[in-house]
Structure formats: structure tokens, C-alpha cells
Image (cartoon, rainbow, N blue to C red; front, side, top):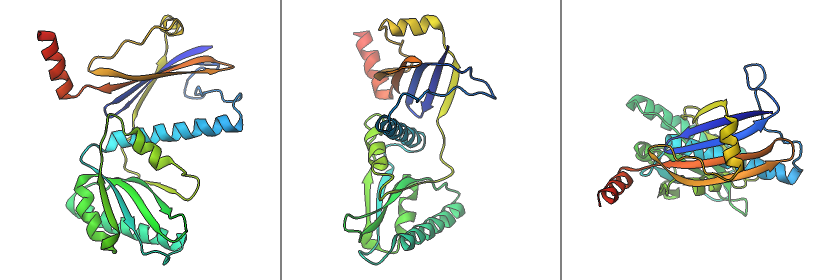
Length: 247
């Protein structure tokens, strides 16, 4: 059994995972999680959580407070799904032409969705603040536009869950190809560190971060896996900590 330590850096978020694997990690044989014990329901839950985590990491790598979650709506009852997809594709092309001329990058994460009655097709996307007015000008129905400012509250997890909800139903997930990806580092873990985790000892908090949450799950084949999440200290937090230390 091999022990691995995985670090995932996504903007201000740092995740540290410890897990065991029957496979040795190398170029020809990459260690993977063992999912044979999972039922269809458990696998569906695991897939949902992984999808939310992936979306959260992309959000943190590419967007921040001050950016926007936008809704672009088309007139009710006038489009089929295929027709609306063409409308969105042309919308993106118009934005891309303008941003290219201005030397800007057009990055987005979102989805196409239809209303409950099947008559109101709309697009939800997260965009940077510098794209807002360009997108407004490129959407042909000016009364079908709504912008909501992003609030990070530490991690964007609620936004990630909202974006991923029912993604296999009426939603059609869309992401641009130029999104920055999280930095993932996997090394062999130390048995001593893993044993400390088994005894219930907490992982030391990395410098410049604060503890956010932890999680643990059991696999019938490989045993316990541990997941620790840390958030980067903001300038305000560092200042407050320094003042407390001086007192």
C-alpha cells in the first residue's frame, strides 16, 4: 500500500489530501482512487462533489470579488434549444472579436438553461468586470440582462454548487478554454504523518493561511483518506493578527 500527499492550490485556496493506493504513482501507472465499493447512489454523490470542487477551483483561479454572475435572457417561447445554442455561440464570437481588439481575455464559466415551462431560454455566466460592458453591448435583448456582483465569502463554494446543480438535466455547462487551472502537486506521503492523522492529530497550518475545514472518508479497500482546506490570510487579517500579538 502506497501513501500519497496531494496539494491543490486554487487562488487563495489550498487543499491538502492524504490517501492510500494499491498502485504506485509513475508515468505509466497513475495512482487512482479505488471506487469498487461504491453503489450507484454513492458514485453519483461522489461525482457531484468532485464536479462542485472542480468548478470551485476554476472560479478561484480565474475570478474574484468585483467580477460578475450574469444572466442573459431571450424572449420567451421563441427558441428551441438548438436555436438558443446558436444565439449563445454567436454572442460569444462577438465578445471575443471585441476583446481581442482590446487585448483582453474573455473567460467564462456558466450554463444554458430553460425555464420550468420550457419557454424561457437563458444563459448564466461568470465573467470578469472588464468584460461586463462589452457583453452588455453584444447581447441583442437589452431588457434581458441582469448582473449580480460576486461575493467570495472565502471560497465561492455556494456559487459552484449553484452552477453544477442539475447540470445533467436542463443545464448545459459551458467553460472557456483559456481558464487558468489549479496547481496540483502529488508526492509520496510519510508514514509518520499519516499515522498522526489516524490518531486524530490536526495537520499543521501552512504559513500565510488559516484553517477552513477538514474532512475524512473511509474506503473498504484502502482505508481512511484525509482532506484539509486552508484559506489565504488577507491583508486585513494579517494586520489584525499583528495588532493582537503586539497587545
